Each structure stands twice: as structure tokens, then as C-alpha cells.
Length: 309
Image 1 (tube, rainbow, N blue to C red):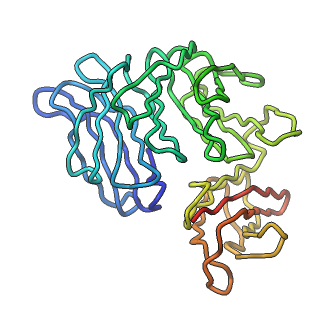
Image 2 (image 1 turned 90 degrees about the horizontal axis):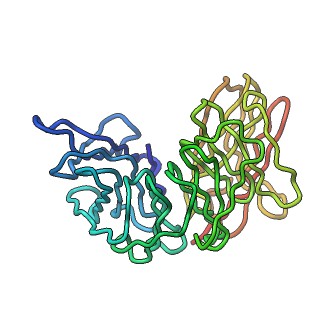
Image 3 (image 1 turned 180 degrees about the horizontal axis):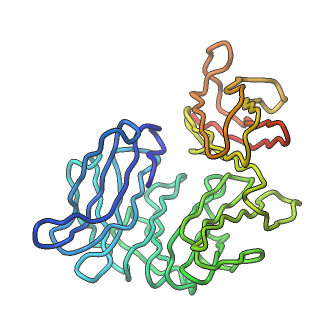
């Protein structure tokens, strides 16, 4: 499942559909947060779609990656799904398991395939191998603050990091008990998250001077905002390990309250709250650095949020 970074009500999913004779690549979209869905058939041949990526600068542009006729395939729409075209994807090898679009330069894409990690500088038309040696790559994350930093989660070799836009890669598996990574997420400047095949979630601290550690996800708060950086709107998601009183608020860099978002008791599990970029006086906030703070009856967490205009 992929959320449109520009619209909190739009989600994409992918897979295959039966045409009556074959199973073919397909993508589906909801514009009402899952109440109704529209399915788009992508390919005329036998295949399966494994990933969807939405251009953070334009919701009209969406990529779907997967397999078709026993080879890797990428389809693209420039009109929110009304029509799709298959990219030539010259240089790409292997089924495509994940796609990542550089939020700071959206013509740059990374593809995680059955063989390696590939990079395109012209919106997916031509690809070159990054020299990644970790094998099948299930998940890719580009740091939205520093787009030279790219993370790759692999089928059985754990997590790799590049600090030079895919030029070279280094494993970062300290604390990982399971090396098959299925999904990854990032709270910029705070934590990198890895969801593993063993149904466990791990986090890696991105804060300078903070020791990385493995923790039991049943005992700590998970807090992140997406998109981040955000143009105006962002969704703050958080996981509560137990029922507790909850307070979520936005602060500026001087520590002044900008907006109170939630106050009250909440149950165990995942929750989310939407911030539209307005303050308590209903004024649109300026671009800059802000902080969102989650306070419970037993712990508090504060993370950075960047607004760009």
C-alpha cells in the first residue's frame, strides 16, 4: 500500500488480476481513504505488480513495478491512472520489487530488483546498476533531507546504506535478528525503521550522538510524520503500546506552541492525526523547522518536521 504524499485520502495498491486467460499486472487507487477503489490494468501479458511509487511533486505521475512475461517491467501514468505506458527501462535487470523517487529531484529513481539496486536519472527510461551486491532488494528509502543517503532492505542480507547516491554501499545490520527486510520507513533525522519477515520491527537511530539499539517494539512509542518535508499538509502517525492519555502538539524552534492537535485517552495500537499547517489562530504557518511532540502518561517523544513552500 502506498499513500499519495500530496493527498491523505489517496492510496494505491498493486498486484495482478485475472483476465479470463492470464494473470496480468494491475494497480488500484482509492480517493476516499479506502471506501471505494478503481482498478487499472497495466499490461497485456502475464505478470504481477509488486510496488507503486507516486511522484511527490505531482500526483498525476505514478510508477508501478513488477514482472511481465518473466522479465522486470515498469509502467508509468502521467494522468493519475487513466492511461499507462510501459517504459523501455533500458539497462534494468530482474523483477522490480520496489521503486523510490528522489523527493528533491523527481526525475531520479531507484529500483530494487531481484538482482541489485538500479538508478535512473531520466524518469525511468534508462537505468544503470549502482554496483549493489546485496542481491534481491525488497525495500528502498531515500532520505528526504539529504538525498545522497539511500537505504536498501534485502531479501536475506539485511540493510545497506549509501551516502553518495548509490555510488557505494555499506551493510548496517547491528541489532538485526532477522535479515529479510520486507518494508522500511523513515522519520528524517530521527529513526530508520525496518519491518522484517519474522514479524518484528527494528529501528536505527539517525540522531548524531545517540547510540543505536535494538528494542522490543511492544514497549516503546513509534512516532513519525509523512510526508516530511511537507509542503503544507502532513499526517502524524504513532503507535501506543498501551492505553494512555495522549497529547500531540506542534511547536516552533523557539519552543512556542503552534497548534494543539490531540488531547485525550486513546487505546493501544496505531493512530494518526492530520495537521493542515495552520496555527491556533487559523493562520498558515511559514516555511521552516517545527517539532511535533507526543506526550503520554509514561513517556514523551519529540521529532523534527520541516515545512517547505
